[in-house]
Length: 534
Image (tube, rainbow, N blue to C red; front, side, top):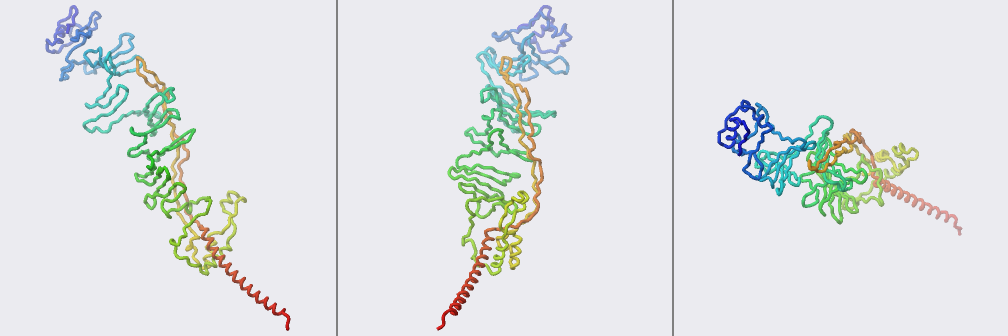
């Protein structure tokens, strides 16, 4: 290393030259007490600091022990201000556009990989993995606690986390916006050229202060999709379940402003597709499609007597209960308005399923005859309230009148299946508020292409935000009062009355036969009286 020399150099600076060459042991020097401070000396305009290098290729290096195993023995930089922080500064010369520090991977920087930290005037601070000559670009690696924690690959791929020997908890990537002003949000954005070939489009994950998490694809409507799939196939998989968690309610909405909306379940041929409903982690209902290519079926299961049971099946030409003779269609206080059918209802009448049929007694036949006399016409009160005089007449009688007739003949009406009576208690149903889905307004960005001064980046012109969905129906409480209702099984009532009419007809025939016999006798007597005497 050459001496630092200028005319009139004091002895203490000569000693510094010897110290740099290892000829003297380090000593404590009061630099400010020397004739002129080091700062003043090195700032002299006629002073040139140039040290030769052991590397003849280089124009010069500043040498010293910078790799000693004992860090205190290394050549270090420290401010002269007592108890103050040390800051190293690098500035451009005059109107130079940038200040940079390069870290070279080889002793001959002409052809090697370079790490560069730059401050570009009026543009950006840039950390670059660069190269010179025939050098190679290398990835950026970040280490914490002695382990690799993140890598930015040469192609821009980012990997977070590593195989650490100890359990340091989960690996996470946090983007925080903890502002309490306005409605702050956090957005992760992946930007590509738009599918249309014009401009850019992004996939965004947004977390709002209001609590919403939004996945948004900003591509044009016809090409925007969200897919979750495995590497090996296009199957959409939710390993361990797909969950939407809220303390109040959860809604998954498929929305379209101009076309149809759909929820697709795509399973392998012959393998069912399922929809499940859980409460507190317990399954309470399911619907599934068996995906049979020849005779497919749709099944619905709900709880019955505390057990999950298959209730309804839609298959081929039929809609039928999954178990025989176990559930009803409609209910005493949840009735169908009308039932339309091309043919009549078919009821089981197999002798294997019935007791022996016994004849009706005289009281029953007499009651059946009297019930026939009660048949008349009537109007439904709700039809009169709605249509007035236009309400149509119906034919029949009231159950209450039928009960009175039966009791008049000493019969218990409710032991006969054609008379029904049902009661129910008060039911209170809480209906939650129904809101339209929140509307995500993505940020408006301007894309800046890469330049010599800076890499490509997107500038946010208008921040994205969430617009809360409008309330479509407020929360309310529905109270269904207790009540009761009487009903007929018309087919059995009609057969009961028909048996009475058959008995009445039989009696009429007997009377007619008696009258006919009497007429025959009378005619014979008349003929005898009119016959000429001998």
